[in-house]
Length: 199
Image 1 (tube, rainbow, N blue to C red):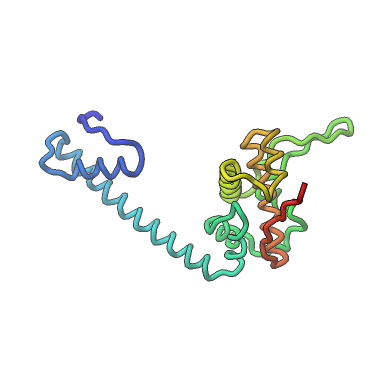
Image 2 (cartoon, helix red, strand yellow):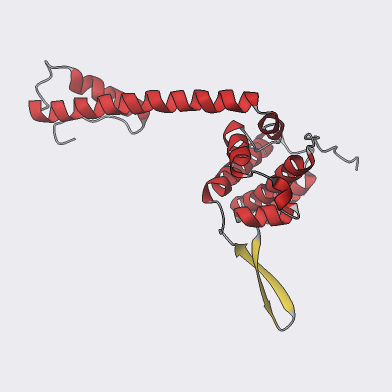
């Protein structure tokens, strides 16, 4: 903006800015600044190429791994989360239950007890932050889809969204997805779409 060049925010904006700066006939940018920005642009293109190559490798590994493909069938789990789970969890049977697995990720509420009364608080946020963020993002995607297309197969999700904020519902759904993933990894099961009960 100091040189009178403004580009939109985001990837397209950066590409537009780099195209303007690369034009040697444009006198708005001093030559020293142009050289620095062109060098940064080359680094950015190299990083994008490396990211694409790693994405291809991860997808190839995902397609070749049977457990990762099975996990990908769960709504809210995509190739990124499926491969991260298989890479992070060597033996799902090391966890006694889905709740223990979910607690390991940090998706269960903290318990506070006083005077013999148990009270559940916010999630513990202990555990693998990367897995927790992937589970939460997947749950938010399922919720967005349910808000647009309806959630006939998940009446509990519809009821939860009616009485709780979206982010609270997303954590509850992420917890449920994590438990399903544990069951599939520990028992070698396949995902079965829930059947909607007739009213």
